[in-house]
Length: 102
Image 1 (cartoon, one colour):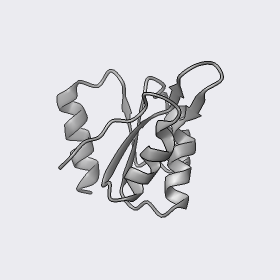
Image 2 (cartoon, one colour):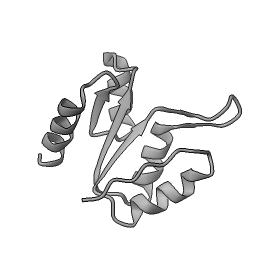
Image 3 (tube, one colour):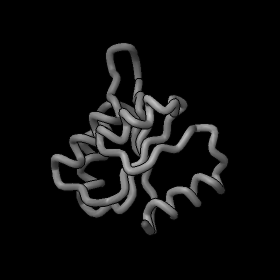
């Protein structure tokens, strides 16, 4: 398996979408991708774009906003799971693995 990270700048977004659609199995997104006040992309917008373009893999949101209403919103947008940012790395991997093998 291979992991890739994107997000150094707004210009990474098209490359991210292309990489995901070229064969990713799992995608983990932050809700607020903010490079400046003028450069903000929402993870939920990317979720919906990936789904509209036929992505069939696991879509996960990683967010500090994980209240019940937030989780419901992320799921309505297409997220299969929501992981709080304070989740320890071991539990993060376990949660992704559990969701992936459902």
